Length: 83
Image 1: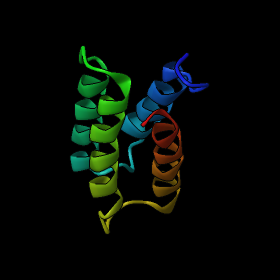
Image 2: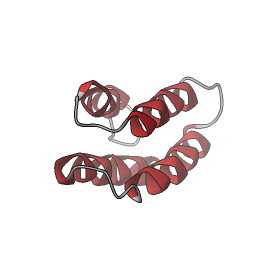
Image 3: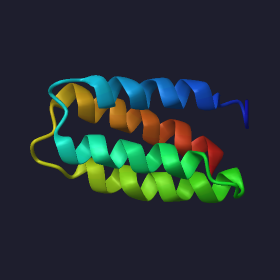
Image 4: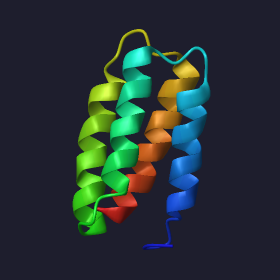
């Protein structure tokens, strides 16, 4: 647990997004990038910032289902508490 945020919780939300058949392929690829960033050996605040940048890009996808967009904003909140 880091700063009150559980990375396991973040990874669970990312997996839900990735496994959802309605999630666009480009978004699924971006979730792989987020997972890779989280596994990096750098300070958590830097990793969180990188993930926030990706999430912002992901949220701009016009093909994104509304409920997936809501999950992204939940992730943004969690990552902001780490940054």
